[in-house]
Length: 436
Image (cartoon, rainbow, N blue to C red):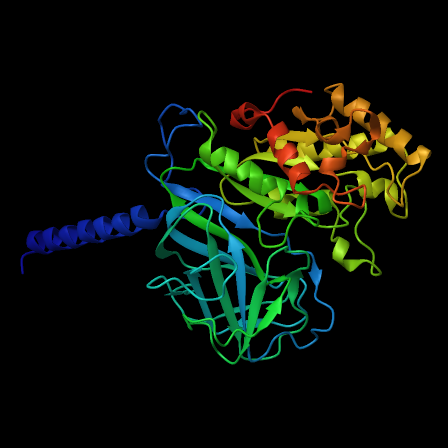
């Protein structure tokens, strides 16, 4: 063969490889960066993302090691039920072994649409086996995390997904999120690919190992991350109804004219604080917002905006933080870190808790002083006034009765709706950080 002919054949083969690689890449995108660099002018955030990109549709913060799970869930299938905020044509998941003490082996993992809300049965034809680095099994080191390969599945917004993992061997404590407000399921043996839910006889109020679901979307432009405490976690919302304030916000973003088409990622942890990590006596309170901000908010898939709701537990929990300036400075640190990522931060005022067992005039005075600083515009880029949205006009230190879940601290479903309604969606569109 002549050298020139050989070169021509090699060039032709190279071109074919490039075309195939490009087709694969366009089909699902690369990592979080989507389809590569773009020289186009910025689009209106309310407009569709024509080329498609990876967007976070659901998330939960890894809160703690589940008590009583020293050997993990060896020989068990865990079917997590989660609810999407935006839809897409492809899916991938994130699994975490953050609080594990040994490697976590996941030998079988699947994803499907639920046949009915909160139901462990898969909708017909939607069961997909997941792979990791093109392999059917994955080992996640202690403290580590992994993202699955993409799988093709048409996922609606506002739908329940079933994400199932099977671990054949002991793995140490399970990384979990304890206040899911959603029923998930467990089954004995490897039932990961069972479309029927018949084997899933054990119910659970927790999410285990699963910390995120992304979709490949041509409609959504990104995601907004909400980070905070039990009020963001939605601890008093109706279980299985998806009535956290972040769910109501997701509905607004899906349906309101001119709204940015964003997924909503809930990174609330009940008991969480701004400045202090949870102690060994209250491990479920999680690491502080300042400690987990990068992992749980700033690095999430497609994040475009951050909403922060935090601070009350800093007043309530020992060691109490009673210096309003110190709390405000912690909030400013959140903003500085977000600005370093090119993200704006909407921050909330601290909500009323008059009548709660932890109430005192002193703590309320600190809360009101913190709120004055927040409202002055010297802390966050934008302010969402959850205090104003929830308080009783005739008794401002208390929640409005219809917004009170009954404990005088956490909102009811209608209170959560009022919180979502208070968010200015226009603020979420703004890309460049403001100077404070």
